[in-house]
Image (cartoon, rainbow, N blue to C red; front, side):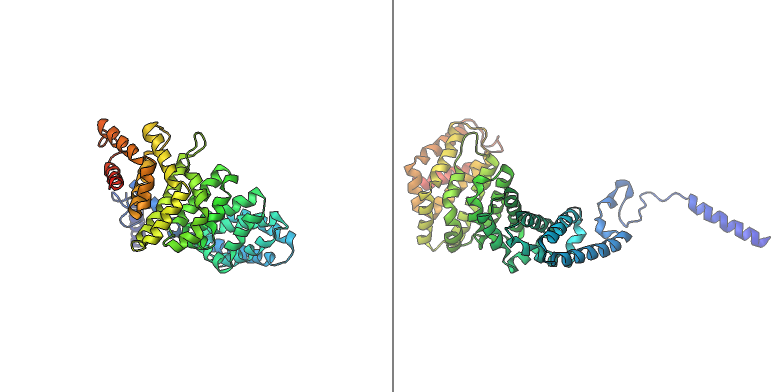
Length: 377
């Protein structure tokens, strides 16, 4: 009987424990309140998932088999495998990006970029390469080791397939995020700007983003002379504002490219006046200053509302930098009557009391005045 009583007591205690309500704000995660759903922000990679081990084993097996098939030497078999690989990579999550076999696979895939006699094979290779770079951008270092950038640049100049061209532009944009200096040193800046007129809007945007990333790496006049100067005429033409054609967002990024290059060179040419004058001579030659003047006129005189005030700020800052670099810039701006525009700007802003009431104009009066003083002096 005693034994039965003990068992009953234990049973009741257990049931009581089951019926107990958890204390307020109780959470199985220390310091996290499930009522606030804080634990939902924990990255899934931190939570144990028994399927991950199986997924890793499966991905290892798939990538190794794919690698073996890509080494078969038969173009049709390789193309078939690339098609399967494209589908697999497009559905893969970020975990696959850490797989050590992915780099080996990328190296093998890039060997097909020379097979221009079979454009479809090149296209599928490029698509696989882009998927892999999405999964692990650091694998772009493999492209340096295997001289792939040169191959891609040559492809742009030799292949006519639009899909292939789009894939190359996409690849360059991805590479520019972490390896822009690699693109600069392989003349990709000029190569991309040289084909921009033949691209659709989305690919033009990719080209500009890529060139913008490259522009951060132009640190001395030698780099400018070798890699940027050949594209100066194209870049200047892109700065031209064409009614109904020019995209204001793209125009703003192009101004950013110009700003990065000139500002970086300014920081490294303080004691190299000869280089400063040479740079300004190039900018004068390709009508950069006239293009800036035209945009300012459209915005301040013609009141073109399609132009972003932020873009105007950047142009004024660019003028300020150029005037600080060389007296040639000051002479040029005086010759095209920029002084009159700046006076008009300041009169307009003060008379309409917009200096402090309009966020787009706030804090730019100092830029106006600085440029004005530089031109007068």
